[in-house]
Amino acid sequence: MKPELVLLVVSCYFGLLIFISFLSSKNSNSATFFTANRKSPWYLVAFGMIGASLSGVTFISVPGEVGTSGFSYFQVVLGYLAGYLIIGTILLPLYYKLNLVSIYTYLQKRFGELTYKTGSFFFLLSRTIGAAVRLFLVAKVLQIAFFDAFQIRFELTVIITICLIYIYTYRAGIKTIVWTDTLQTFFMLASVVASVFIIGDKLDLSTIEIFSTISEHEYSQIFVWEWRSPNNFWKQFIAGAFIAIAMTGLDQDMMQKNLTCKNLGDAQKNMFWFSVILVPVNLLFLSLGVLLYAFSAKMGIPLPETTDKLFPYLAVNHFSMFAGVIFLLGIIAAAFSSADSALTALTTAFCIDFLKLDINKDKPNTRTAKRLTHLGFSVIVFLAIVIFNKINNQSVVWAVFKIAGYTYGPLLGMFAFGLFTNRKIADQIVPIVAFLSPVATYFANAYSEKLFDGYQFGFELLVLNGAITFMGMLAFSNNKNNVKPAHNQLIN
Image 1 (cartoon, rainbow, N blue to C red):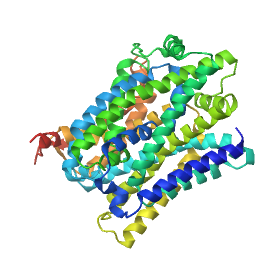
Image 2 (tube, helix red, strand yellow):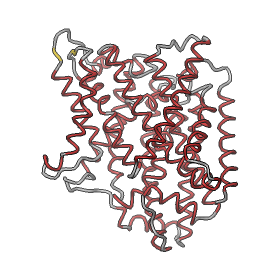
Image 3 (cartoon, rainbow, N blue to C red):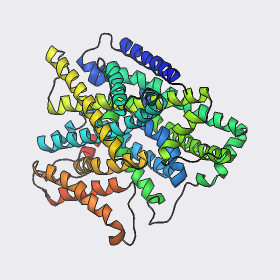
């Protein structure tokens, strides 16, 4: 692809996003940025959440990872369904009952201020790293497709990318994102469907032959039953359920969109349809991976050194100009649908949990604090991307879930303890337990093969981390001054 064409596509795309930002920010106030005034149509939220949950990691890394682990990632996706059911029936009713803006306010009500701050801190850490990893992917693609031709450094590519996000999100925040994510999800799904048929055409396959090629390929095996394998079905399924709970239900970014719905019923409809659609969408991405490897084999194209580079490499160097443009639109849409809402959620959590801003008072100092915080997290994400670029040497989808295992685990343990026990624990103890839990998890993972007869941890590292946090809190808790578990409060 010519750099000039890349520049034109990117400019037109962001021009459209900025236009949507202009329309959605009319008559906006501070509450609009954080809650969209709770007027978002549930079907828009559901469709937009697909793009936000998948991101550039799914678009690039999942198809490439097919060459390493086949369709085994689909076992994780099946586990998502169980996790989303728990979110819709337990967590969403709790959040709406308490009328939360930051979901970590629940921890304050249940345990105290230090636990509240600890929970919000782990989210800030998790989402900052997660947003950096996701933006890293699209910045790499833009670097190869455009900026390298003009000898522009990767760091400047990242700065430009983040600045574009800031421009269209700083006014109306989550209200803008509900609309832009809808557009970006459409572009992403259209891109992957188009890519499947473009590759099928290059392989001289009819529509029926495309499906048969995918189903009969050696990489299309889904289930792994070897218990020692990190891809074992039960490990992946259970981990998928807890990943969904932690990275969606306990994540301010994903829940902030749900909480912009008019009421609990709309939010639950959103979660139901979102989870139903997400399963075939993930299967589509895995199918694309099979076709990419089949195309490379037939054309005698050497595989790149890392699986993450397979789709970008083929799209930019071996597909037609039209296919290259389709890929470019898809990766930009996939990456930015996740990154833009992440920056808004980071701003929300910090402003409410640490600055204690009253979002219902649209004062100049409130607006200034909000914009400075938004800018500050943009800078932090930039630094995280630069660091990740220096140290990463593995598939990004694996990196995302590995990082999540350490950073979301304490959140999982704290919320589970609050929701499903009636025990009290001293507020000052919880941060100690929460920070020691990832350390214990790290050593368990490092020595698992020696300690557990060759057992290797996979995505279920998150479950272990959450369990350690839960057991640590249980060890230091007591039955004095019992509180009613939150799930019982909702029933009663």
